[in-house]
Length: 86
Image 1 (cartoon, helix red, strand yellow):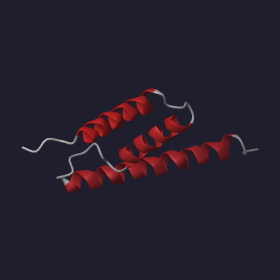
Image 2 (cartoon, rainbow, N blue to C red):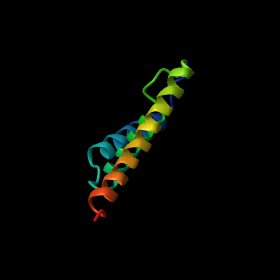
Image 3 (cartoon, one colour):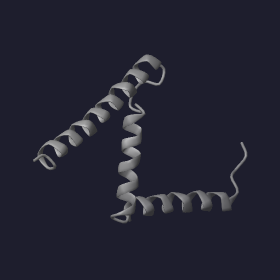
């Protein structure tokens, strides 16, 4: 078995430390927004479902998409009815 070069071990350790520092020292605005956007993207793309079951994945995507459209439509309707309504 071939041993790793000592510099390679140092490089891997440095990358682990950098990843840990990045995770622990997030800026409030930027990384929170990015994390929430990634979470929303994963939710809408059905990343939490079994990738082997394509019917479940697509049904989840369609259902979540329709739910988003409904929520936006409801918000617009309520705004027009109660804020702009005379």
